[in-house]
Length: 367
Image: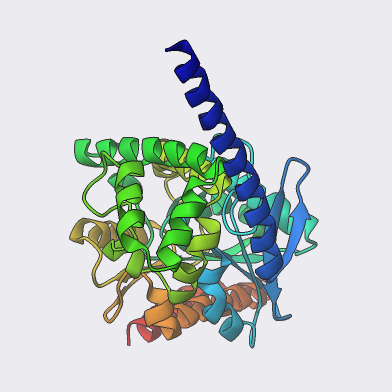
């Protein structure tokens, strides 16, 4: 009996060792086949991937959602680059960026973004554009660095009331999600997640599906599968690279920490109050929950220069379905910033002129 256990243990250890080597070799191949479209900037503790385009100012800074990368902004960034200097980046642990220090709080993410911009030699002022989870990080950046912020555009952002405090249902979902992510991190390290991705790409969906269900047990039906509606709602280029990015240990660890810190992040943003005295445009997706859309409108009313606009034809991915609306929102902030600079030199055209400018821009966005 003891000999059998020894043999079983030896086989298991051998399989783990083979899996680790398989993962390392596969990762090297992935980065060779899919090199970063931008460059890696060393922050001292880790490197972040940043992509720059355009040359005009002020600089537009694009922040992706919870699990997304620079790819979620690629089409819009290229369009914006005709008029602005535009940067997008991968948060630590996502895309081409290294794993960063823990925990992955919105405060840490905002500070890392600021360090990234400084080390990359990208001077302020910045127009901060955040999608989804960016609704928690960009307000913190604006509040922390007000003199460097020209304005904010939030694209169907998460709102603090959704997670401060979370409902029992949402709290339970995040706990399960973080637990599954940590399980996936270990399995990614030994190559099992990569093997599942290989099975899916070779058409062996039956065995792959069974492994996925085993890995994601305890989650709602299909939430851990590529058959999930949420997965198919992603932009095509994000879905394509999921088989490269999502099979990394760093990805699973980072997402687990971001999920665990959602209530903390929401409480921090909620405590900010009126976090920006510059123009803030909040775009709501037509398909967003009513509570979120109502809070978007309420937040815009509370802010000194807030504008709320409903994207009538869009789901959560407004920048893909109504990119012109996001571009107009960014242009509105840029025009208002330039008006502020001009007004600072002329007492006659002071605050009343700027207030009219924001009001007129709000109407243009809604038309």
